[in-house]
Length: 231
Image 1: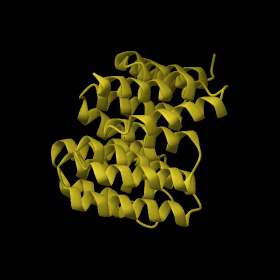
Image 2 (image 1 turned 180 degrees about the vertical axis):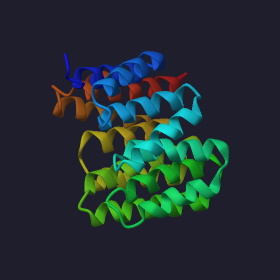
Image 3 (image 1 turned 60 degrees about the vertical axis):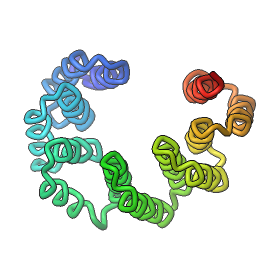
């Protein structure tokens, strides 16, 4: 009865299903059992953010940081609040604090996504490259490939077809892991390279028959994009 792990997992499950109020309820119960539970802190801050309760999201994340309970998830929340409110000074402070830490490449990834959403294409691409370079320096080749794949999807969404195709190819050349391949396939499907996208997914399903994400989620998402493009 004093174990907060089931509550943490329930909060995470609720969050993934879009049940934000329920996620907050579970996370709050977890914090009542253990006020220093990093997972519960992450889940609660994320739920507050999703519910547009920005002051509470920021306050919780800042309190946790002051108690040396910071995490990448809480930093994402603080960045998101600053981004939504247009508080560039706060945003820059968070990024500066992360410089030189093991989490820097992840926050740069988050920053690249935000820059792209604002239409700052050149700046976004430079930040993507910095994030990948740090991931490679850390020996995280597969994650660097995932970053290529996600950027390819962003380029596809913004109409940069050639860039999307090139970055998808970079992702596939760098890693054969499912996550990178699925992001690349999704980008290729979005730009109309349907045969190649289908080939990638078919191979993944053969190679990873027991991987539920490949079989039931990622592969189906690519297939849905293929079918939409065919209409």
